[in-house]
Length: 164
Image (cartoon, rainbow, N blue to C red; front, side, top):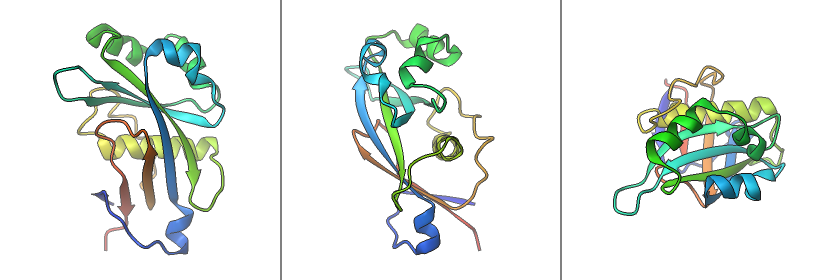
């Protein structure tokens, strides 16, 4: 498989079935996610970023909450979230929340959400400080990901294609 960032292509029917659109909202503080923003049942992905006022922002972590709300997921002990909050503090760490949909209009399933999460991690492993090894659910199949809305810093659209 080959990763091609920011590639716009004409999609045939097979590609269209594997074209996922992730719509992002954010940035939010940890408290905003727990108090009000993390309770949308259509959102199952989240990213954690470090956005200091005088340095470049960076993507730290990509996660999913497929069996519960993102607010619920983050309210319980989460090893990586705790490590990020300890290292960077709460004032420069922000959260983006994402909902997935297929270009064909179908909604996400738990399997699709885990595939998309793992593909995003796989495509951004060189940028992530945490969870870069978390790609075991991604089967490296053809997948096109397009990000829209308030896209987190450093998050790219990408396409996985079969090498010929």
